[in-house]
Length: 125
Ligand code: FES
Image (cartoon, rainbow, N blue to C red; front, side, top):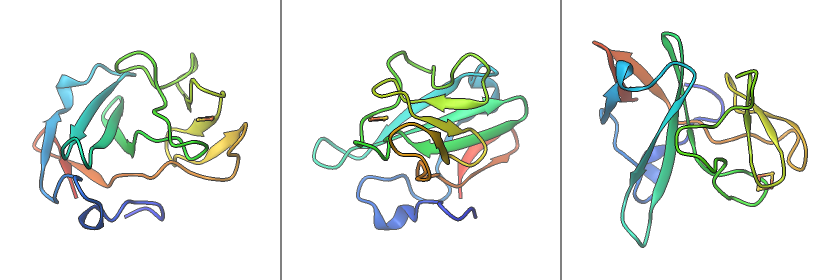
């Protein structure tokens, strides 16, 4: 588990351990798939970014103002694919770590969601 992994059981609306999110092949390489859990009172927004056979999952909330990062469904990275881009004020986050490397929240991080691949499925740890 990474340093910034969310302890999902402590967050209302978050998916429980063992939740199958989707199949890896359901995510286009270089794109992300978004998920919403919980209800209107306690929604939990997250996304899973695919890079080849790897996946990286984060809460969809920028640490600057807690806005969603993306404007277009499934598109979270800038052109190079190395960084997630927050479309509100331009923060850049490393895909592998979620750490902000540029703009208003430099040094802070997206909250990662621990996931793994099991039999071709993306599963919450
Ligand atoms: S809300 Fe993301 S950079 Fe401001």
